[in-house]
Length: 383
Image 1 (cartoon, helix red, strand yellow):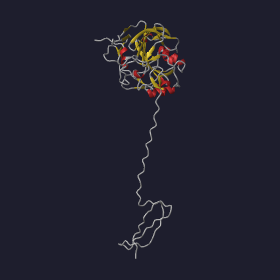
Image 2 (image 1 turned 180 degrees about the vertical axis):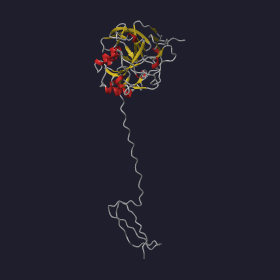
Image 3 (image 1 turned 120 degrees about the horizontal axis):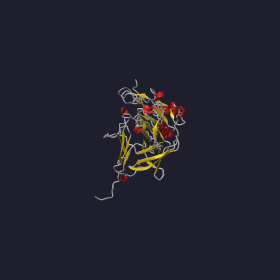
Image 4 (image 1 turned 180 degrees about the horizontal axis):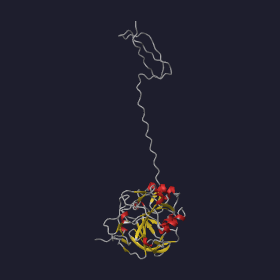
């Protein structure tokens, strides 16, 4: 008689289990035949596999808290890598066709002084951060080189007066500054934009400035601050109504102190709106404003028609410093070409600026300026 399918019952622990074959098809009678499962075999048939235990989710490794230190040119807290970036000083055009200029708000320090034919020019110094765009880049002057030499900065320009060019040829490989002339870099790390007329169309940016730095051999390294910086005044101690006006023959610059932001909104000529940086679209508003008064005279470079100037920037003179809305009359001193321009109060004590950006307005002794000192609100007086 034929046997039907054999059924095997699985035991526990892998021992021998007996299974009976069924009898003839359709019956349940045992045939008496037994089957054995060998010892050591791991039987699985007929047993429900338990679901695997979920693996514990590993805790993410916490990011280390960045250590912030004061930036050498602003006193603002920055990451340590930012403090060792080599300073880059860039000459920026100030003719009306060059406006709006780009890069002001990324600069740590901005210098403005007369340059040619009564038209001022800017020098923007970048150290703790670099601009997304800066320009239009213009030509060099000797006294700007001497301010840039205070940091052995990379000095970016295109061309310059004969006096400046001779200085850069002799001492532009790191002795005073690192010469980054646009005649070398125009078309590479400096480039022409199409939406402005020449010569007011030469620009650069952060990526190209760092590339240019490597090309001329300047290296990052630690910097020693030369100005002291402090915290801003409490809001209720800030005066209201402080204004500073500087008259250049070509334009008038006005700063209006804004107590809520503790900054000086910058206006050009009689504009109703403050100056705006073309790089970021934001208002130009430094934290400190410094006026340096010094002697200027005609530069005898064989081109009297250009009305170029030279400045007595080494020595000392009157300084007017405004920070936290207050105005102090003091003195500036610069001992040599490479020495820093230091600021003192009337008693000869070194001044402390507020941490942040500083604009330095350099004017000849013959240029006019006005200061209107604001008043601190009497918040204790009852109405």
